[in-house]
Length: 500
Image (cartoon, rainbow, N blue to C red):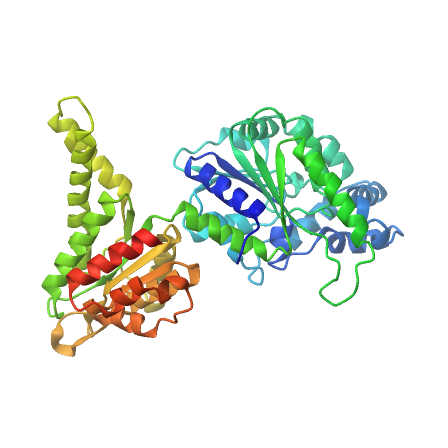
């Protein structure tokens, strides 16, 4: 989708912060509603009725409404237990693509006022370890093996006492969560925040901003962003929005107010655009991350040329500052590693030649290893583990998703295997694993570059590709598709990668 200049500037700047390791995200309820979770008005509707109030007339102050109900009962336990029940993990409330895209980014901290467990589920889906902070005491449970921090400022469904919903809860917040707020202040001063899922009608937003007034320093130099939806002149059902002009004016005032605290508002026509924005950020952050998918057997035609092609490609990728991700496919994996290691040696020699000091053999060798460790990411699959066919299929699918999540380019080389998994007696077939990696890559929006001359799944995929993207319709892509030699295919592939 085409982006506005304002959106493009935000995407570029936030992606830059992510690459530099200085970005955080703050998630509001708008991100969870797409999954099917209820909004505040629906949540409190029956409680408003119990105390004789009309939820439609209380939309502007739902937090006070919650307080009125608790006052009438002299206890908040019932309401908070109900909230935990509504937002508990449920099979019909699946993580959506926006949570998955966020979990694929190199974020070290997530902040949220949401009660649900969608962020946790997205991180666990990626097999990422995290520290969950709900109360001040949780900050003492620092597990260094878990590099990701999830801060749930309004509580967690696992502990109803932690839920923040009433006016009294907000008034006591500063005293009860002093350390958590200090942590937020520290991050706001050192990282670029993206506020996502908030709107001018969200009852949380004013309380978040009230806290931010004590935290934000307009002259601190940190630029923060909030993505917000424009008021709609016409609702999806075709009805006119009678308050449209008023909402426009109110939003303009809010944008100006947020600017006072270093928060720049990025407007979208619809929250659906958030997915496209996040995809573009992922594309920029991981633009030089390449998945090499494939495999071959000793009986595969042209296997020697495939080996040489793979090694030369890996050398070129490393020398040109790409990162390689691979599942270490049969026979192919060792040649990816061999080429990548040679590329790291050549890259290290080039770096050393730019230095005036006399090279130290030990330090040079260590730098080769360091280069390799920072440029090559191997995801070998556990073939000999005892498990059912369905369990193995599910495990392999998750491994492939996690491997591909941090890439933007997928190169497919051959992709053949024995039909009976042991020897040539059953003949050769196209690898379903390679085809699955292609399908995950396509769904993620990766550039797909099959080396059709290598045969196998690569040729099948190239022949079936729908040429709906600009890069597929280019002369270079056609040169890759129609290459008559592996050398010609390598040249076409290199030129294509330079253009992407």
